[in-house]
Image: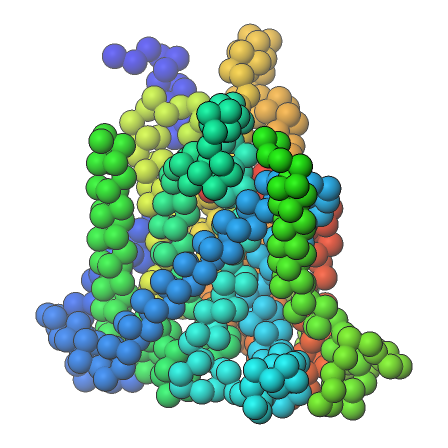
Length: 296
Length: 281
């Protein structure tokens, strides 16, 4: 039994969480259920002839869409390359920032700047630098002899997606830098010194002492970023709108097209539910993996 | 440390080279953005672009400020972002306090799981139902739709940030205040918040940045010029100005400026918040 005082405190605690809970229930949980529900309904604002329960037909339509395969493949390419690049740049910059040198805070400040600007601005500025006519990067590359003539990076089928990946890495790697730097700073100096005295060289110390200690942070960061990147809408939309000819279209862009251009909310919900399914399986996999790791 | 002198010097040089390389990589777009925004058009459209600006001009800025709805967008963004910041801060102070002090209750524990999960639910998947909710409440084309959506997506992270800050404050302080007859809300506002001012700054920065930078909801929920926020506004400039890159870069400079100013002054807090959110969360 709770004492009277405990009961009073519990009432207070519940009062404290109610506002946040309301937001969660009304604008997170309810919409989530709605998406799952709609994915089994005929719901098309342009075509009201069909309504009601649709079984799996929304899912079937989405999967049979001629661009579904491309979008799925693009999403995987986009996510894997982005996160790999972000991690690589993140760890190199974090290690450099962890050295005892002058001007560390200054460099750290500069390196975070890309992360604080809006994606739209980042996308637009890079688009301008990459334009075939008068874009500075194209002109430089021609001058250096890398290219024979300016190339339309965002407008060609085989480079559009990769170019957006490049810009995404530029914008997102600072987050890795900061988190990895914090983890590096917590690596014990004593262990490093002890290893050095035992004759472990710089490289060995790095591979065998520093890296293992970064494992947890790295895994968490990579996991979070895989989700964030896979569901990112802004970057691709701002830079290519999924084009040319769907060559840079990912699943979130496809959801947007279904919903806001074709007004086919049923199909859009089915696709969203599928993505949610992917995410949840990833989450379970990750959880299983990390729990087993911790136990072993 | 623990290396021969020569090796040490080599590593130091290498470090500087790497950091310099990163700095150029990170700053180049901003530099070029600024240079483009003050160049006369004939120097923008040239095959020999340079960082040196001959006869700088404010024409593009004038064009953006007086010839477009930029200022309206800017004001809208500022209002929406500030309102979001205040709303999520107030909500997450209380929620964070409950998470920090009252996890012994089952309801609170459940709530913490809900917050954790909701952090994982991406906005784009909820786009359609949220759009319909806003439509049914006839909130489309209002600031309220954006403030509600942004608050929903910032509250979880802010709550966890506030929780971890409250965790570091000893409970004894509260107890003595309680004995002196201070109410719980009084304790939060008179004792805890003054102590955790840096954390409050970090949390509000996060909320503000999130709201200021958000694009998708602003793009979908708002269709009229009078309520449009900056990020969708600027993306629409692209269609409006065609290839007038000078004006577009001027608009970019103007919208990056407030963030950079905030950033320069509050960098320390921002980093603190980033690491608190990622390493512990």
